[in-house]
Length: 371
Ligand SMILES: [Mg+2]
Image 1: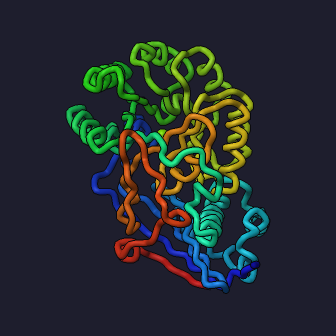
Image 2 (image 1 turned 120 degrees about the horizontal axis):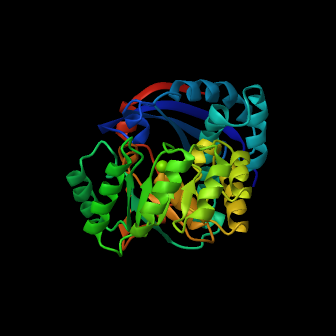
Image 3 (image 1 turned 60 degrees about the vertical axis):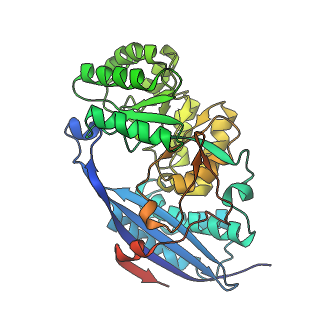
């Protein structure tokens, strides 16, 4: 039965972090420590009494811009059939076409797109992963939030132990400090502490140039890393491709890209072994599925960036090797908690994304608008 979108509501939430965190971008002086994340929530209501919840986000700057763009394009959805998600994505993109088909413009669309997929899955009474066609009911997961450069080494080891004890399967730590020797020492200590069996990843957050990445990449081979993440500038596809060809250790990148077209540029140049799309950043689930298909056809592995609450469902629907990133940051925004066991995160059995907003999310709301 067709349905109609009868109402929409948008909210901008400021999520504070318990402790400010720094990656290499802070140590090289490019950014300030991260203290909060801005979340754009979209709720879509239908005449049939259905509701879908979606979100997008911005770190440091961009939250108010996301909200403003979403507010401007939202009325285009009223009266539309919420099942026609691909067509509605195009409609929203054309409504804002003057400001482009990537970046902030599409990240605002992402909140609506995710809400429409959530609504469709709820309507089918299926978890999103099942609606998409799941390959597995649990996905390997690794911890990132314990491995920032702002944490002293002893704390990193303690965080890693706690993560593994809670059932998380792998550990990622940040590298890319101005002093490369300090990076190598840190990795050596963590690898020795974890033993050879625990999957370990490093993330340089784009702070190396090509010669540094190659030299350090060779020195890192001995640690049997699961991957080296963002060794180079996010848009240096040729540099990533050369590195991926030169090293045995897999290369991972893609989190900063903001469209399926940008991902295709990386994939077709052989720039990485693991693609790391971020559904809110690329414009939602609709473009993410296109990236998944491209990655699969090119024999790549998938490790979506951030937002495990959403990416768990998408990774479960990927045919190849896949990991989700365990970040507990968004937890206070939702009533539900994800379960982790034996190294993997379990896809919840609830319909849709299986998420509902908490009272805390309401308390942190700074802007709100309804149509
Ligand atoms: Mg990263």
